[in-house]
Length: 396
Image (cartoon, rainbow, N blue to C red; front, side, top):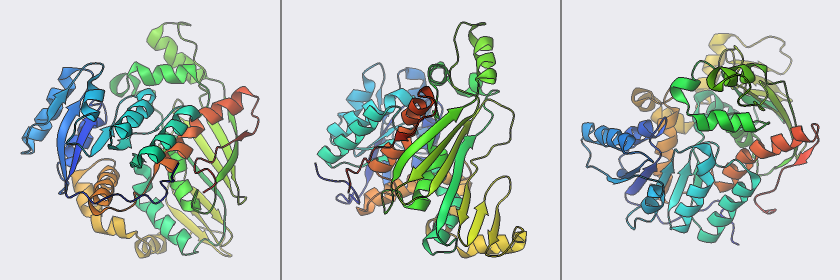
């Protein structure tokens, strides 16, 4: 099958988009798209009618035409089959992302999938195989890649500011225990109850893979994972479902070490049950410099032993501000979505489709980053054994 590395399709004057999944993240995405000059929301889908009606109100309040409505168990298929649709935007539960993405591409649609794009290696390959066969775009909606610090460090790395990068760290460390009932349905809790491993790896791994040029000069070779006991997780499951009713497998903290073909190492961490401040870790260790985003941004270079003074660090970040951030930052923060990174992500997706450019993140990124869900579990269940990471580009 033909590769979709650097895939560029015919420019679209107007990107006609349909949304599947209007629960937690879908409605905000619908609203963001009403601010995009070269995009039109033409279809809305959810299992239930209520969220569709709420999304229609968003369009109405923004002065947009009403979209076609799809509900019920097969509504997502009927939406993907529409002839006048260019992009299917999926914000349904994790376990449905891959199947919906495959079907949309088979219907001749570009697809954007919320994170993770898949939960098994088999699903990752299905996305890659379908994208290559259909030559359609498949992007995972990893908003962390558009954060200002990460984008500035990406530029710095590309210009050699850190020297040769030897090790990086990232993760998703965010105490969600107080939010499960308010923001998350049982599907995500029960998935964690059934699985060991890093079930939500892409916020941490995505920016790091871009930094290291994964499948752009390097590749992930193998990983080793280890998890702690599921003490806080089991207590939360007991409080929700009754003591002992749902055995909880996912460790309170999961750590994964990954080695690349060029000998760089990656530490990835998943921790959502214990008390802690929000952090995606994001650390860079290079032969000439070090960067650390949390708890506060900081840099150390060459012979330095202390962090660069805050004023100098701010000036450095301004000097290397990514052009995408420079062009969109103020507008993005005004519109909102995780301090504007969601809007920048959507803007770039539409801009690339509108101009016929390769997307910032492709199906190989989606597969590589999402494969860690199953691969980390396999390592843990084998006693923290090394597990190879597939080369989804087939050596290309």
